[in-house]
Image 1 (cartoon, rainbow, N blue to C red):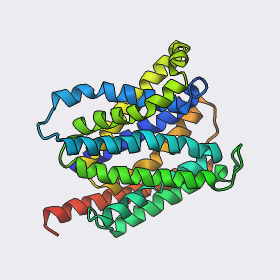
Image 2: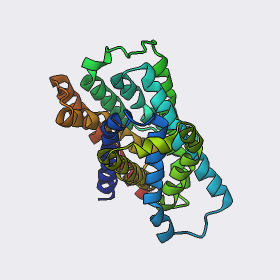
Image 3: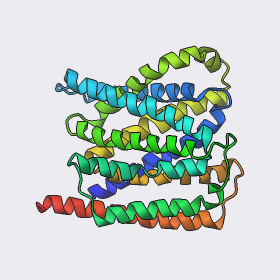
Image 4: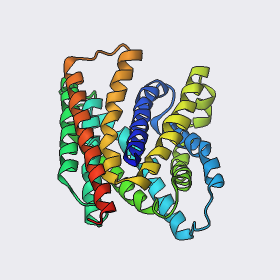
Length: 302
């Protein structure tokens, strides 16, 4: 049952972060990407800050605080900057596909530091989810970005995926000492501190004042639900499972964005997308099988 709890939590997490793509498409017309990232993580961090005080622990040392702040700066400041920068030079399909390599880097890093063993089902799961996403996005992969700089965006997005792999691996180590209710708000607010100077230079106060009621509502949703709740779930899952398992489900992000684009933006869904989604979910089934075997082996001392 614990595997199902973790699975449902990480599915919900990545569906929520997938909705952030569609929400950001509206907000990016009035706010710069750095402003959106700052507000998302500020609202997200503040919204779950009560959990920090409610479940406050006494073992929060200065070393732990520095580690959390460092990872927060990495994932909630550098990661969104690289993510936005990458899409300047590539299209959404190719960028999403490269970002979906995150579980590979999480697995390799976890293996290198002795946190996780590489098993066959995990490798099959990663391979199938990447294959499925490639099929789902096949009609869009050949599109050229407006900038048209070959491979620059893909290289940037590759480093973004590696940053994500580093975060989930090291965060999982910290989350063995502190709960997700402590780690999440502190890490998000640490990222905000890094983003704040850039937002001030961009004149974020004037831009926020110009937001319509719809924009304000979307910004609150992006911060509280697709920010605070989503990343709390990610960190909670990391307390229960491996970094590889948590990141394999990242393929749900672009799939969710495409479905919402179809429902609300009039974008077309083709047969290759449906075929790719089936392959992705077969891969996620292997991921669950791998997680089940890992827990069985752990219980039996294997």
